[in-house]
Length: 138
Image (tube, rainbow, N blue to C red; front, top):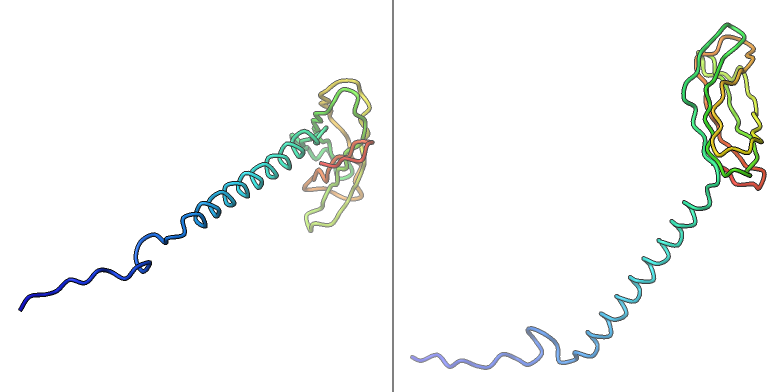
């Protein structure tokens, strides 16, 4: 008995006959991918360049039951002016002090030791954020 081999049904296996549709899908996918990459890049660039100031609390020291010293460093544009908000917390996480510190200097980096007067002994200090007078927050 000999086996007769039949031809495979057309368009059932392998690539379809409509290669133009495949090419259109590849082009549309490449364009949409490039647009998405451009949007992500644009948003990232705007985020990085839009931050005219940043601040970091280096350390704090509890001086007494009514006072805390905070070492704060602010990096900003030379002409930027604004304020940073600090708060001190007690052992039970209650707020014992909150103060806004203005920075108006013409330098790009401000490094200061600031004092917070507290209502009771503080165990932690937080930098809540900084805002320049133009409204940008960090």
